[in-house]
Image 1 (cartoon, helix red, strand yellow):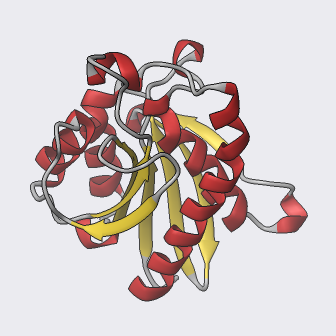
Image 2 (cartoon, rainbow, N blue to C red):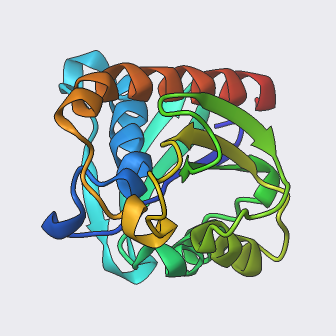
Length: 187
């Protein structure tokens, strides 16, 4: 294997948070893992890895090992899992990409960048603390701004509307494409 990469989808574990805006990272991580999994296997093989505080799928792409993770901590503590995984597998921040929801982007938009601030996203802040740098790749998935005077914390924990849910497969496919391009460029 040439290198090991870590792709992390952010979200909150548990049925209560399924299909909430804050969990777009989990949804997209499923798409990424399935796209990397060999067709003959029938999809990715997720495994609960308690000592890493995450659910992991181990796949490969072009000779590189790709770990796809969904931290099983609450969003604001995501760095705990990312730190454990990156240290155990000796993955430097330059080979970590985090998929997360972004309030400052229109619903459905997908943008990749390296480093930057946190924009109030405590999951990203936690990851930067545990990696000891903010300089990791990010796939920012737009969820739009809350309506009226709704608090952002309430908005991100709302479920997607029925109309938005019909768009999710296309958005997740766009995220998978962005991750695939990033892996190609970084390999």
